[in-house]
Length: 173
Image (cartoon, rainbow, N blue to C red; front, side, top):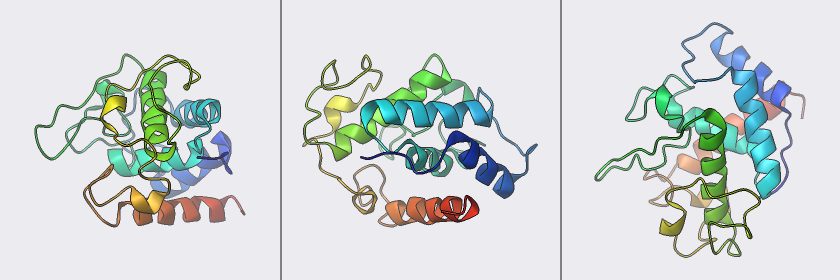
């Protein structure tokens, strides 16, 4: 939870410095558009959209989608792509996929986000797995997102935070 420290332009510049502007980027919208959607949707829900963008990089392999989720699913957080009985969620467009990821993050971080409805959320529920996060607020920091919460790897949060520190450094923050 909290405000973004990086802008969409800064996220895009960092991303392109790591992958090259042409790369094998396969998301359904331009990286600049996707970064802006993460910032906007995060701001609406009080979730740090810049770190959520970095999480999407980890989940999608730098938006190359090498795993269970395809680019056409607009699922940047791997929602539903579990180790057991994988059924990745599909969203109609990039913004809805970003919104679902942000809402899912809020369910993990905010004990007050008791329902995927308005309120407590600012936008209609897009997260098909919001109800599965029990109790709400069970992972209030990125270091608590691994080990079976969002991901199985105990280093999951550290991986995201390490990349986020790189993005901050590139932006001079």
